[in-house]
Each structure stands twice: as C-alpha cells, then as structure tokens.
Image 1 (cartoon, rainbow, N blue to C red):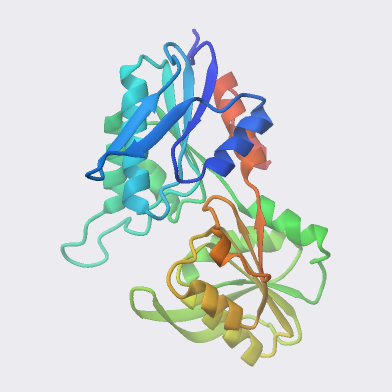
Image 2: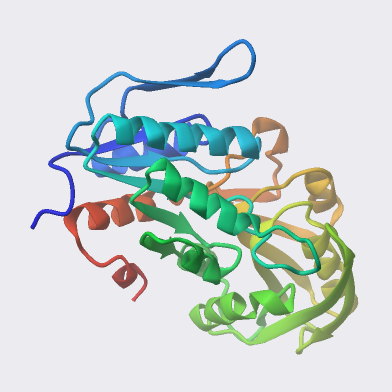
Length: 317
C-alpha cells in the first residue's frame, strides 16, 4: 500500500525561506510556488499557485519571531493544502515555538506546547518533522507521528573539525535539564562533563550558584538546545572563567537571541558561539563571535526518508 503521494513538493511561508530553499536544493526539487502575504487589516493571505492534488507536501516553517504570525501562516498553509487534496502533509518545523510551556509549573499555567500540537493536527497535518524540542516529551502531545532530529551531531562534528578533542577539554551543561544532551556531546568529543547548578528567580533571569565538575585549566564548551536572552549561557561562561577555565565556547541548536542577547554575548568571555540556521539570524545580529551551521542537509535527508518510507532514526546511528 502506498502511504505517500505520487510526487514530493516543498513549500515555505515567510519565517525561514533561505533554509527552505537550501533544503529543496539538496533534494533536487524546486521550491513550491506559493505566496503568503497579509490583508490590509493584518489577516494572513495564502495563495498556492500550483496543483498539489495527490502530492506528498512538506511545509517548511519555523515558529520563531514573530511567533504568532509564523504559526498562523503554517496553520493556514496546512489548511489550504488539505482542502486542495494533498495526499499527505508534513509540517517541517526546524524550531518549534511555545515549547517552553510544556507543563503546569504552577497553578493556572497553560500548557501551550500541547495547544500548538492540537492546532497543527486540527489544521490537517499528517506528521511533524522537527529538531531538538525543548522537552522531548512534547512528541507525546501529538496524535500524529513526530520525527525528532538532533542537532548535537552537527555541532559536535564542527568542533571536531576545528581540533576540539583531548584532555584539556570539558563539556558543560548550563543547567540540570540539559545534562543528557551535554553527555551525548561529551561522548562524541571524548571529553568529561561538568554541570552549572543555577537558580532561576523569575523568567529569563538566571543566577549561577555552583559548578559541578573539574574545569580549571581547560577549554570549556557550553551546550544547550536554545539561547534566548543569553542570560544563562553568559553567566555560566563568567562562572567558568572564575573557576579557572582558560577558554569558554558555546553552542546551541536554536539561536533565538532575543532582547539583550547579542550585547550580552559580545560582552561575555565566550570566544565563539556556534548555532544552526533553524532560526534565521538577521544582519543586525551577525557578529564575529557567532558562527552559523546549516541544518538543510539533515532535514533534506529526513524528508527524503519520510517520502520513501525509510526509518529516520538511523540518521544518528
């Protein structure tokens, strides 16, 4: 039984067209002809200028800033493809926004990650392809298949190619929640692991308390899934220098970099920050300290495997 359409089509809205074009180039498939604009009152207008009947459609759209606009563009595009008789619709979401609200941390909190999952399913998505969800259990919020790609292999390979391997290296998790990711990264670089133990008094404000592990005289690499205002990562870098680390580097999959992030990174002891292009980096945020890696090859491979009905998990074996 054929579980996908007879042809593959890649479409994008306005959040990250450069990444979408790179993915389509890697696949050797032209980017679909669609136009996403707004009416004069701000409502989103979607026009699909080619047939998708019976096709396997992949919509590439990160739900990054402006988050609500990009999310609505994705939902409306999915609805348009569903009504145009696409055989299967995959929402390719390199960066899944609203993922930080994944549980009730206190009374009367919303669980927005679950709400967005329900919206995508209701709009008509048949499956989701994403990378480094803020909490892996968000996959369980969906009642459709979710293929979860990982950014650690891409980041680790970059550091290996630049000579980061050996006894003078230590991998640092900026908090307890990122230990599993940091341990995988440390294993790939054959390096020991350290952990920053911190207390967060309120949202987007982090206070470093202690460092668990030996960092004195070593090159330290901080790794996280995302960097938003850069408070956690820059405070962690300062603490590492105070504890005797000779150099501090940082990396993450999603460089959200909102608010004072760029200024904080520029003024911090971090020598280099390596991020991926799951979130586009505008020209005003491009500084010498930041290096951007492309996730297009791995997303292209993931899309190809989904289309061909092959396992995606083997990408990381």
